[in-house]
Image (cartoon, rainbow, N blue to C red; front, side):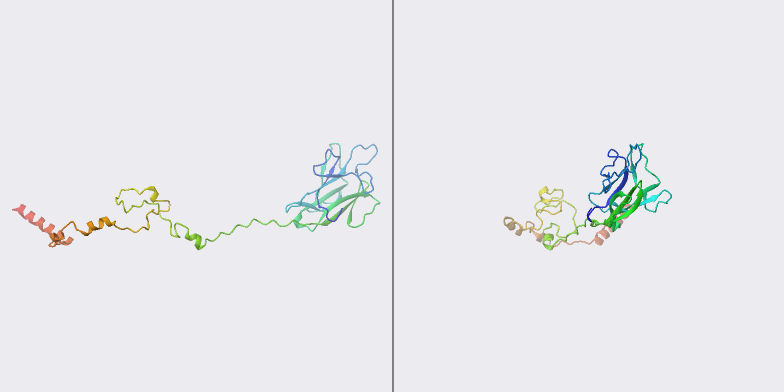
Length: 264
């Protein structure tokens, strides 16, 4: 494979195409063209192959195989490693004297990952960039690592900044920056009755009357009548306005006189 090969995301055992997991490719032959079946023997009808898969597109949370090791049955499983999965027929048994284990790591945490597994006969030697893992059932296992092309970081969608209102737009507002007023009923100057309801057209949700701002004036036809007083004010020239104290004193004096008359 080329150096642009995609990292492996899974490695497993399978007994054939019928048990092979979806998206996995079976290694059916060695580099020399020989059978890659790990169950060899006289009159052996069962089969055991390695299969692997790659991710079509690497994402920030995708895990890749960063390490592969072939361990003996007496070796303790290293920290972070796990034995590969087994997708085999019930009659097939995977050899336990030597076991394959892999280490899965998030793609954004590693610089190199395993991109290829090759099988050869024991005497075959592969040069760089392949590394020999060991021998199993008469076959030699090799792996190749490639640099990981990390996906670009996923940035959160920026929150749009609130747009400031220009003075020109603010001038178009009906409230002109003043605090909202309750939607009260306005009394028209032409209809001064206290209980009169202002027509709906003269009031709106902004509490502004349709006649607000219009100057009040008297029609010229009524000015002549207003200039002629209908009441002769000379009859009231001797009228004196009493204060509240004077009214209360007169009330108290009348009450005392009345009681004195009753006592007689």
